[in-house]
Image (cartoon, rainbow, N blue to C red; front, side, top):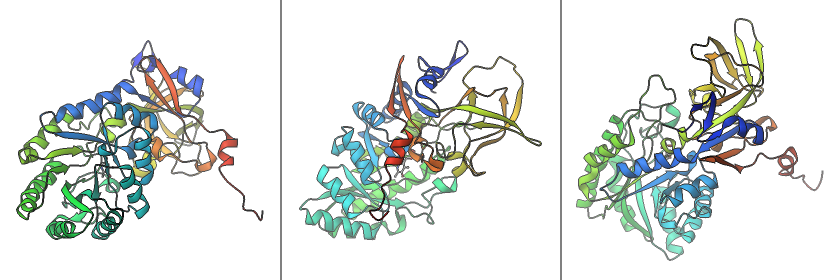
Length: 421
Ligand SMILES: *Cc1c(COP(=O)(O)O)cnc(C)c1O
């Protein structure tokens, strides 16, 4: 459910007409709904009621300071995967004890930054990383709470580029080797084992892979406890999927996911952490874009938009589907026509949809890409020297630019000439 609906023939973001945002800020532009973000965060929080828990928003899905500040004030923790994300979370006022640090390639500098600033735990992804963290923490005279991310070898049945829980993926240590790795972690100075971490992938539309993974984690909890480790936290990762199209897929609800967690690991007396990103941010954002040209091709017609793959790369990168709807509501029963919907970037990969049935839209009309809040703006680039796409946050009847569009001069001024030129 989201807060982008038609009212009096105009697509709204809460109580703001998207055409008003386009008129003020220009296009393309991302627009986020405060009410949707809060609603989704609270759904997860409520789904785990009864268990001690922290919902750590996956910062990588949508990392604007305004969004992090909003969620932090709701009590959200944060899951960060880089020094930059750690810095963002802290700058948004998230206390260190609510930040978990994940990621396969943490550097010494990133570790130091987080240890100085404070954090809840580091999720270790490999033995070499574990040894380096031990060295860094020990040299700083601190003891850092750690979990080891185990790879349960479970098929998440999602797009291969976002599956992370199979033995062929680069993430975590094989669950079969967990006892050895935990034994070493317990011996190393500067580390304090506190729990187990698992994250099997993103955009999961079925609970079965979660169930398989969490059962393995529950078994491992008993085994590691018997080995003498204090397993008191389980970080169960993120990955719950969202409906990208209103027609077929109906992913499970956070409430069902919460019930599954209670059923599989609830009896262990552990504090639960989850790291949802997409389900909180995805349907809380749209990408607003304008039709530049309608081009009649041979055998196919093109809608050429002012938004492009550099603004929203998901279709090009993951073959992702986004519903694309006109901002002016089409009349009921209005005829549709198939278009290839493309951006202006100079490569054929800059295609959002092929043969997509659309109501008649013309040059100058606005369209909205739905479900674009997660892995949208954060993956945007300035390819083709298209200034970084701006972001707007709506709350009720007010809206504010939360990241402005750079001018050409600002974009160019970031480059510097070497002294010999
Ligand atoms: C990407 C990621 C998440 C968030 O995944 P979503 O599908 O957005 O919920 C959580 N934890 C880790 C470790 C991740 O890499």
